[in-house]
Image (cartoon, rainbow, N blue to C red; front, side, top):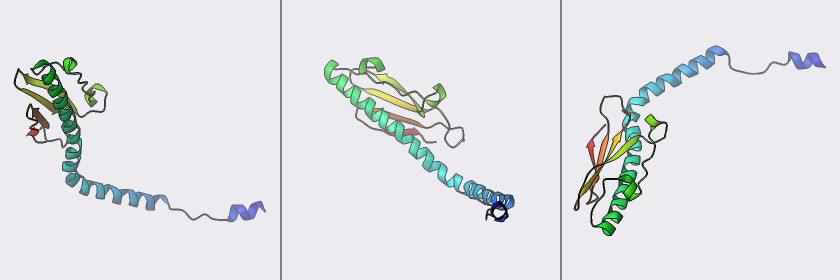
Length: 137
């Protein structure tokens, strides 16, 4: 009874077949990666747009109460997300680069180079909610 069980062969792939499949998958990834990099950068920039729109809303609320814009995150209750260089998950760092009684400008700067070309993505928003990409990655 045991001998019949041991004589039975299982159908399986051998090592060479698995290696060939892995090499083909690797080649396909290398071909597809350059075309996907702009989409990856675009997807990551959604974070900056959302956070800057949130910053705009907080600045607007602060302006209605105090008749001026603030340059301090604590005053407007904006908690910037912890970026990847500090052990967090955010891809951008945030700052208020200008604020006065009638205007403000917030900036999101990428903390990593998404497509490794040496250029870091930068987005800005102002008191009129004009969101623009200053530096494209």
